[in-house]
Image (cartoon, rainbow, N blue to C red):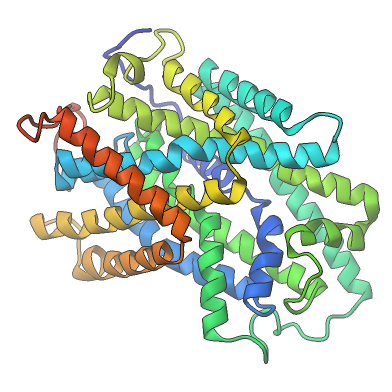
Length: 446
């Protein structure tokens, strides 16, 4: 390994970065979550997704602003470090680690559960090891190879989702819906139910921020990354809402025998057993692409923190001299798949959400603080730099309050451990957090 001064190489285009963001969010996730969201919203799942899209766009705009001013790979960690100072940046990075360290494991676990359901002769643990191993290998080879593999898998996943939609439309041609407006609003729906469902749907958008971890590997990053962040949320949100609308026409209302498997049941209804098995592949393929993107982003955050010496630099801050990838960080995130064998999926996703929404909140705060310190920002306005991020903070804080008590306990315990590590790192706040100034990001863009 080498602590090369060359650093990460800018090879990715706007299309590549958007593809990584969409695969991170997993296009087929709407099929998985539809039953739960439709039940919560009394049969108005597309409206819940639209509300969630608008809510997440507030924070996406904050990420876009920070990515324009600070095109570095640390995402929320890098923004907080530059705007709020080293100590605050470290704690934000520590919270993000809760998300980025365990999210690859969750992606592999979901994929492995679906693979085991279709191929029960192979146990979940074997699928976990295979998925994690293949993903890690692709990411170690290099970002260009990961880019090509990700584009292919994301295209296949989107194709299978659209194929499912096509079968639904053919089914609807022979079974005229009673109402085309009921999926958007009906006699049973209400603001409380739709808001609660939107809070659940918001979890589908985790990952739009991950494209900011690729800033140093993206060409013309200060322009490309902000556009990519907004595009990922907009494209993903509109896809989720459109698919949910079609599914809601096929199955009106919010009552299901088992909402967790409604996508499989609906696939059987519109296409039969063989098609249902193929539709299941959308989740499997999307899961592999998501795991690839999630691990790539996680390793870049670890690399950024290692390069800054807030994590052991010789391990986390090292790049392979030939592939220019943080191999040791990739191996560590790959090994995290072993934790998925003992942690339940619901528990894992709940405390991951604590880290993600905490980071979202702090990025919104960073935008406001940055504006108050730099009121001469080109194109800056009170609406865009104060009002919108303030609303975004309100949304993300609300989402944190909706997490389970177990998630809050684990999240706060993780934060307390980070405070203890920060105390040790600074020798009781007697030493400053190590600083790293990159030539192209030493001064924020105006």
